[in-house]
Length: 155
Length: 155
Length: 77
Length: 77
Image (tube, rainbow over all chains, first blue to last red; front, top):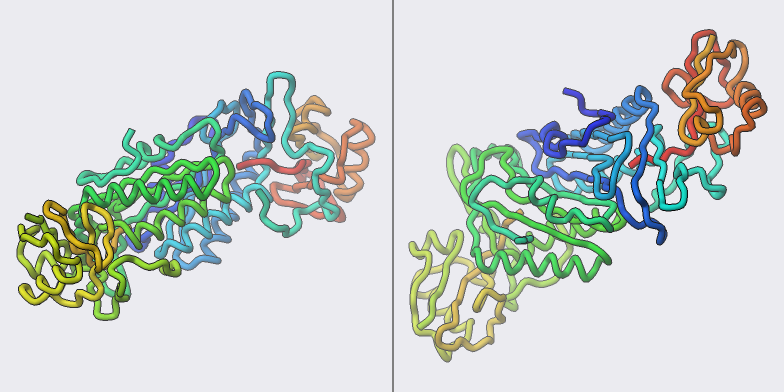
């Protein structure tokens, strides 16, 4: 089974969940990232996701391994979609199963924050009057070492 | 649409998620409670859930209203199954959508903790050599006022 | 008359899903005490009460037609 | 030879998904500086580098055949 995927097709949420169902798990959390119409008051028409696919799959797998090491008995599965996505389309699905529920929430949250730190996937916003790769703003944090630094989780 | 349900049939997870999809939401979290084989070292054969159905639906709706009041822009849907459930069967699905992801995790966690406090649903564990209603242990906390008290979330 | 519903281990002890009694004028606490004595119900100090599908305090007075439910510690989820 | 991949706004600026260059013996920092000059790449201080699908520090030395990718700030999720 492929637990970590980059997909050009719509994501089957149930299929991602099914990967982490286990007899020893009492809790499964999922995070479903959907395309939101309004960001910072601007109206998005659609998004375009691009990935360095081979590396992205490896980084998703690394995140899963980190989770399974940090939370005892945890199992993760992640699928991220790329290409053009319209409003309410599902961009990412993270499923995490654990024996106890507190861990399922924490581990899942960890996964989405790590995705936003280390997985080579980029999002371009398209509006009525323009388009821009997200993260290409002037205020973007620099990476002086050439590698991502540990940082606080942000919104 | 019925956002809060008690179901005698297996829960369609996608259908619960679909209830909270909205153009203004960027994040959906789900909590899926599954029947775990081992609890406290004892091997469960199956579970039996019973509900005071009319009141349970009202209490689920109350939890949803609490969430929508506490987290701006949040929308919740909850379905709890009753009857006999086997290992890995889905007992409860909570879906919460919010504009931003931190709220989706917090509001979802709030929902499951509140379910365990105020929703009249009971679980009977069946083992090889016995059965017992969960919460019927001698060490169960008393409710001196006859009503549930605010308490810390627990595992 | 009043319908009184039982759940979980209380239903097992009473042997009925519900009974009909005339409890009008009694408080919730009085009704619970009577039921505890009649059916030898265990650990009623852990049992909440609902009146017409809403939690009710022990000093609430029951009127004719109110539906009462004894609510043992819940264990959903 | 080395394949150098571009993504997001860097791909738009360069106009290619990748180019082939001989970068063996150079450090990551040296290659980045050359590419920045040649293509007038913006804000390379925010751009990470991957070598063979793993993040690589600026002082890493490139060998023949290594696949290099310039990784602008990621925005998945």
